[in-house]
Image (cartoon, rainbow, N blue to C red; front, side, top):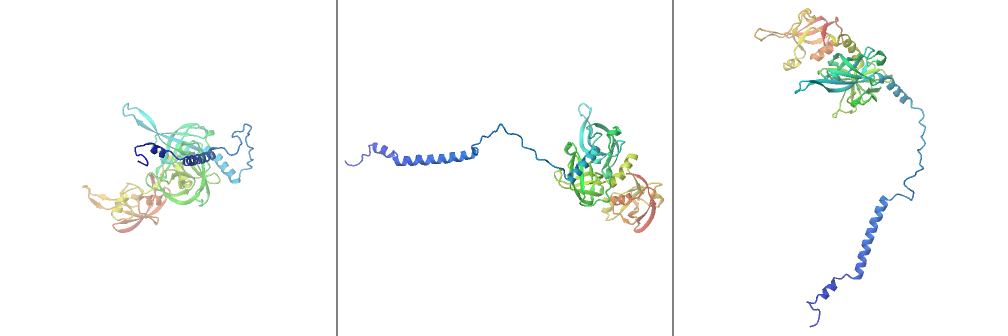
Length: 392
């Protein structure tokens, strides 16, 4: 029988052996591939050139002379150096009772900034900085710490006064300016202790004037200064200065979803602060002019589609009583007998609610006379009222 024997395995083994030409091509291709990979890796990790990486004889480079500071830099440094001894750091502490031992212990309630108002140790800050505390520590620039006593607060203005018994030589009152002549675009400087850090300085400009913000009591604070100087947590209660280094406002709040500076900060104008603080130092509270009346909440008058301030009660022998104003009276079984007078204007200034009434009276002093316009049984009347002292 001719041809290959199908039972003979030798021809199959021979067929499996690679031809010499094919084996050479495979090895050359593989070697070229690995050579390229090695070259690329070497190019990436190898130092450039042939110089060594380290030079034991290297010396520090020569310092280029700075030259003199620019005039505006010198002015900013001088403002900070002059004002910073007047800025303080305030720590509030509360008191809490242990539910198991019934012992009292102190817990932190917040921090903020403030400034020295006079050499008697009066420290001015925001009311919200100290509101949750029962004890307060004031740290001066020299890092000395002093326990502070509460003097008084104007919650509606977000202003509070503490007092420390530090020696007069350690107390440098801040220079006072005015805020009624401020202009948008003026440079301003904020000093405070954000995040509990040592004193910091931020700069900016007056972004807007005449803004309104709300105090903790809900009453609006008018004529607030808006600035783009960074005001972060801890800056509250610190001073806002003009380019002459004078106090023009008290940093009080920021507008930011995160709570950090977002380019919009507010300061209570010094003209308000300088009017309120002496009253707090003298009386511990604000003595403001008033009528001697108790009024209904605005919600009640608005629910009746009325605009104005509805008198609930006229205090006996008060300014309003002497002027003939009348409050609401009920029968003995609680039914309405007649509605009290509805105040709608003070000296021609429209009054639509309690805050407008407070604002209308704020510009006057105790003993001043004002014309009160009111509605009684749908008829309009006017009475002259000599303002009396009322508590804030």
